[in-house]
Amino acid sequence: MALADGEGAPAAGRFFAFTRFRYESVVALAGLAVVWQIASLFVPHFLFPSVPEIATRLVEIFTSWNSLLDMLATSGRILAGLGGAFVFGTLLAIPMARSPSLARYAYPLLNFNQGIPALSWVVIAIIWFRGIEFRIFFIMVMTTLPAFTFQVLDAYRAMSKDLFEMTLSFRPTRFDLLRTLIWPTVLPGMLTAWKVNLGNASRVVVVAELVGATGGVGYELLQQQQVFDMAGAIAWTLVLVIFVLVVQGVITLIETRALRYRAIAEHAL
Amino acid sequence: MSNTPLEILFERVSKSFSRPGGGPAFEAVRDLSFSVGRGELVAILGKTGCGKSTTFNLISGLIRPSAGRVAVQGHDPYADFAWFRGKIGIVFQNDRLMPWRTAIENVALGLELNKVPPAQRLEIAASWLARLGLSGHANDYPHALSGGMRQRVSVARAFAGKPDILLCDEPFSALDEHTGNALRQEFRNLLQETGATSIFITHSIDEALWFSARLMVFERPARIAYETTLAPETSEADRAAVRDRIRKVLSGEG
Ligand SMILES: Nc1ncnc2c1ncn2[C@@H]1O[C@H](COP(=O)(O)OP(=O)(O)OP(=O)(O)O)[C@@H](O)[C@H]1O
Ligand SMILES: [Mg+2]
Image 1 (cartoon, each protein chain N blue to C red):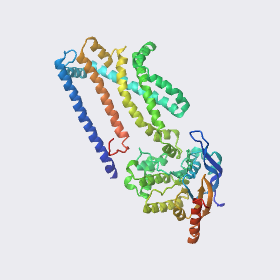
Image 2 (spheres, each protein chain N blue to C red):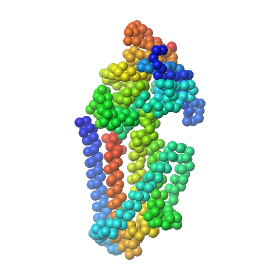
Image 3 (cartoon, chains in turn green, red):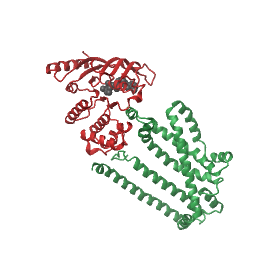
């Protein structure tokens, strides 16, 4: 079938690109571990704990119920925060896309927001709100919302006038226009926003948890700092890094699936 | 054409586009009047940039006239926009395929927006792809199709909904001679089958003559500079005269 011919080749290309990427990642990360291990032989142990020690702590975290709950709590906070920012960010982008004059007012406010440090939102959230989970949600949304709005707006603005008029010529309902044209147009931008924001969110969430939370990765990190346990601190950091990498992998999978229609140039830049 | 009901009416229509710099507005259509009866086939010729595509946009209601009145089936295509759902099919000058839809999904778009059930619309779309010689490419994305194939997909998309009115902007221009001839024949068959009113834009005088249709030659800004109607029985000598006359008008001597 024509489908198999047309689709097989790029799919295979992507597959190999992906495995090559993974192979190189493994080499790079293993190299980092080796350098660290060598350093640990020459530097006091409480500054550079050995790799096996960190690995042991990591295994402990993944095998203890309480630690797993901390992990889940933090993951949940990241995803809830991003989900909230995504929904509110998109809801804000829609009227901005429809009304340029509203956009002219909203842009400076969003840019102003971009300048506010995460820690300021932590302080504000503590003063304004009582519930710890709500505080964290608020902090996450305020820090990651503009990126969603900007990405959705950019994608919408870049929408082809030709395709818009072509679709319009069939007289679609508002919902059909959204479904058949606008959604596929903004989807790539949204996926990018998720990827970018995921990194931001994992940085912000620990700051948010440091102040007030009684569980979660940030809380655990604070505990390690108080007992001066470097191996524990690194193990908890790794937990968060692993979470980000896994979610990023999931988004990449969605991307390859949803954007499979894109042409792949045979030359790389 | 007094015995056929009126399908498209232009009454002293003008269209100007404002310029981003704020300079004087650009007039693409000036004082254009004509009417087209139901089931009629009209070919529009005219130099590049004389406002042919703009005239199509006015008929399909995508843009609003600056002055004058456009009526299609008695309705204002711009103001009564939704009323025309399923009634107008357009083959745009460029193919305008959605890159995220396969060929067959692109063909089915109009049917989908007109609420035809999925199984039925895919069947119709598949039969159109077959008619245009694209059966083997139903599941290809546009980037994997050649320019001529994409053009045929966009022709299939406009035809699949069996609209009352077909507007085709150089539908056969991106095709080799053989495919072009087959598609022209297919186009004529379809018009006979459905009785659709059709206007097509072409830069080829021969193509316009081949259809033995009503011919309108535009000057710039869009106005009718010359108009005539050919019948299948029109003699070769008369055709040659018409060809000469069109050449003169297009070169600005007529
Ligand atoms: N949206 C627009 N804004 C500004 N100017 C426009 C717009 N659309 C068309 N024009 C101008 O109107 C004139 C007529 O354009 P149109 O596309 O109708 O020409 P055409 O007869 O279809 O030409 P071609 O044979 O090259 O396709 C052109 O000079 C073009 O620059
Ligand atoms: Mg044109």
